[in-house]
Picture 1 (cartoon, rainbow over the protein chains, first blue to last red):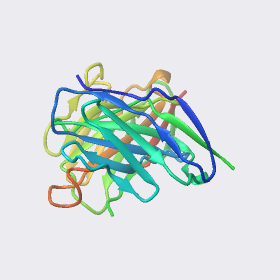
Picture 2 (picture 1 turned 30 degrees about the vertical axis):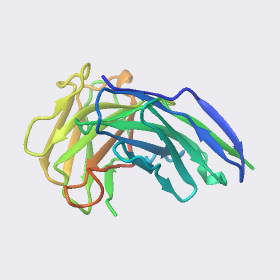
Picture 3 (picture 1 turned 60 degrees about the horizontal axis):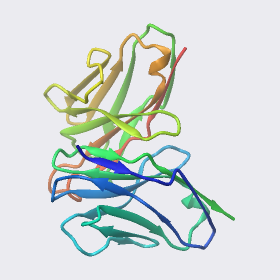
Picture 4 (picture 1 turned 90 degrees about the vertical axis):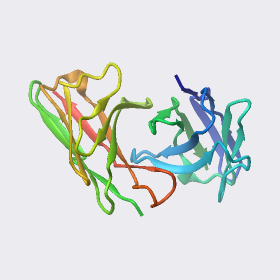
Length: 113
Length: 119
């Protein structure tokens, strides 16, 4: 069975600085997708970034980028130039052949002014 | 974009009553929807996969007679919590997959969630 692990329950970063959120996963599948979702206080789930496992190039979306290490089964999220609006719970998620999303336990990120 | 709505956003009910939560895909047809449950400060746990025109597939440990799912049309799935009890109080979230050919690889779009409080 697939598992997703986020080892940082809470993180804090100063506005305009950079922060990295960690995620590791376990799977025997070769083709899969990885995601980072943001859940602000409104609790609406928002897709931040996605990575296809067959792509070696790390995904980037504006200030958000990932470090995808397939062999190590690691998928970290880097947020550059942190903004107050980035304050939220961040979930790492795995999707394999079943199309089901398996979420990590989340990291609560607080951006400090 | 792809928009998923949920209704109601917040519901309070008495113990023993049933509550229905609706999940709608507003601008696309969704053959597959998912229902999640989220306890405070915890992650999303998949409850079931809802397929249009067929029975839902429930995850292990989820009582199918307790959480009735109906996906009668391509834009609507409903979750009914039957004979609700205080332990059913939670945040329920649905998601829908874009049809093949639209958007990226079966991306899931989430509804805003429904907070259920059972007294």
